[in-house]
Picture (cartoon, rainbow, N blue to C red):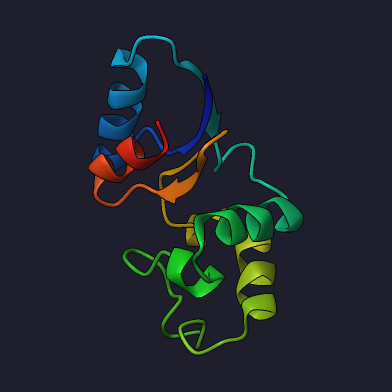
Length: 114
């Protein structure tokens, strides 16, 4: 099974989720440091759609100015535009496998798609 993780190595939850993936036999992990290689707006839209959540549910509030900018009440299009322009607004980690996508908070959510 292939798994792609949109990862921030400075984030404990992201590191712990990556550790779960790497420890699982038969999982080929692709790591994308999304702050260096941000997903496109279209890819973000697909990830949230496949995860069954709205872009606002994937918005990082802690350590960002998202609330002050009104993004917690913004449309999906506005949130996606903001995330594409500033990837620090993307909550992490997002993991994609053939079984689906999960925003892995808590880290154990990754088990749903393995």
